[in-house]
Length: 452
Image 1 (cartoon, rainbow, N blue to C red):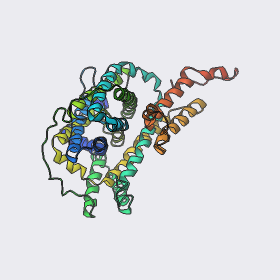
Image 2 (cartoon, helix red, strand yellow):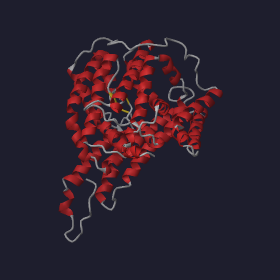
Image 3 (cartoon, rainbow, N blue to C red):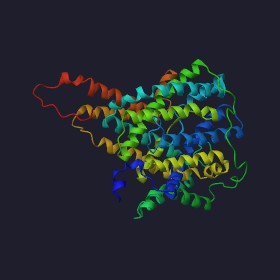
Image 4 (tube, rainbow, N blue to C red):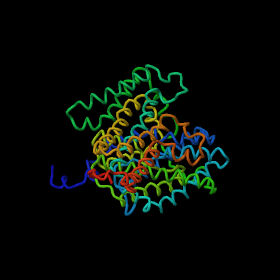
């Protein structure tokens, strides 16, 4: 190891073009299902044709790639320069579907996203100052629940991805997923560091080959349709600006900013680099600028993808240039629909087997952070127990908040935002407002509190 490599922070290390592209492709395969799902759901709700939905998906890939490159490479005051993959946020899907189905249409969605994102962009410096309220007792809870909230996605992938399909939950689907999981484990038993780092990508490729050999996966339609397509500006019409739609998306924006802040802190913990208010502010600006530009190309609000935080943890590849290469691949996929169709043909159970390890790794990283906490302090135990339990509520039952106002449903639909809010509030009560000091016995020796 050279003297220079010792002084370079892990996220700034450049691994070379070949390795960056290979590891970047691994990131793309990990988040591909997540990035195409929102436009698919919103397009279906809007009554678009399959061809038009294809345009939405291509736009999501293209904009996600540009947003990822902006976040990882950065310019002055914009971009966290951390290995964070960007894509269409799930947090706003329900709200955007509601806007589409209540008469506003896609144009109202695009208008609301533009205005809400611009407001979020100017709020970023103020929002980032909440970093002082994110000690290990808070970040540990959030990172743990990020992983736990993603596990149901992996389980659904293992079962086939489509609950209405006849083969949903079949022994064959779950068998393919478990086989892929076994490949990941076997590859991580090797002594070759490169193979271990590429274990997810190699497992997905090998799993797909085995699945295809047993009659799973249809690659026959990959060559059908156009091969090259450039996203057009405002393909679905010029945006319209409706107050109620903007207000609804502004709430979503605050939730996304909270989740992105948590992801920035999480990836900082994993790679062992400093994350301060300025870096969070730069990351949020990249998020919001990408979101404001996205409607021009026909896409939606962007945010950091939590599942890729798990990939950083399990592979140990911490370079932001790797993720930037993944962003370049996403841009190419947005321009080359044939490549998108190839990746889309990968059997979903294969992704499920790999996802089980990935998402579990995120939870394990959170548990590692929680291990730093002094549980002899009962207040820390209460914070962790309550915050994680609150985050599990929407994961266990999505209908829990169904009878609450829309803004409550939007705020607490995600286990990540639920945990984040609960942990921050409890940390304020116990560690900043110090309500417990009045109840401390006079003759007791105060414990050293390093959690705030």
